[in-house]
Image 1: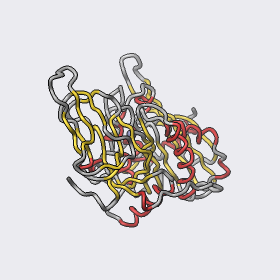
Image 2 (image 1 turned 90 degrees about the horizontal axis):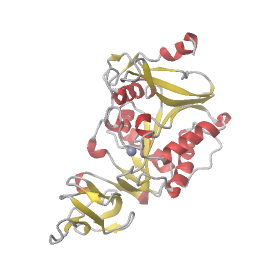
Image 3 (image 1 turned 30 degrees about the horizontal axis):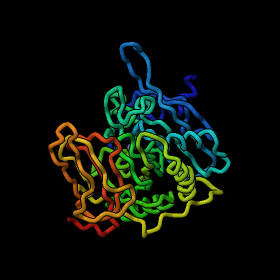
Image 4 (image 1 turned 135 degrees about the horizontal axis):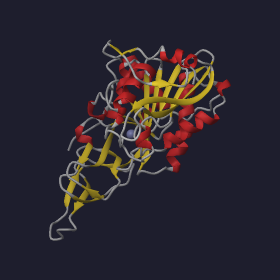
Length: 359
Ligand SMILES: [Zn+2]
């Protein structure tokens, strides 16, 4: 890489954070955000472990650009054990006919690469959850530096953000698009329309209990139209979810006006809008044991019904403990491993939007 080829990109690296404070980044890249065409390369996080004094952790990134139009930032591998999005974004990087673009895609298929190549939710380098690391720290650990670069440079250069998740190794989730609400009604409506355009069986209003350290929250703070999705899970690749994701991502890009000649997915209808309004949606283990779910994903449940039981095979004289649903709705997510410990999320009940009723 020549100095000249880096210069345009390096000019973008002195960014302004969401707090309005200039933050200097150590990250460098071999792709130029401002060049037309298809570029596939890396951005490098300086990383100096025992066996590599002046090395980097390099994160794959592609810039696909053609003509004038919006910029859409797409991420997968935010959690390393969530795979459908990683496959679909890699396919887009390789196969998308860029003459169909009217604008720019910044595509990062394994954004927390250390987690992705180890098949783990969190980074094995610093133990951090990328989706709890925003707005990041340009002088922090590897995960914090990736988040800071995404926050300050890539989100600042984008109009919309698509974040592809699944339930990972610990959950199985009904394939769904997530509706992100903000205090700005028109912004929320943009997010809702983008989520519907994905064409998942359901859309769910969900805010991670109000956590502002997520990538989606950072994107909304930056004013981006924001949609994320949850594609099954179980630490594997769901054929059904992969089909939905392969159809849904181009459909959202068409909706956003950055990709033409798209066959749109059938939009998720308003009747299939659910919400996870708060703690009452979560069924949390209150003992260590073996969890038996009493419902399958997508089944209707009523407030007060037993969602599942915790068994105690090591203490067989002890009766199982019932875990009850606190609201009516559908069994939106359930724990994948049989073993549970106190505090584990065993299930999530999503209610029809505006109808949450407590037990
Ligand atoms: Zn995730």
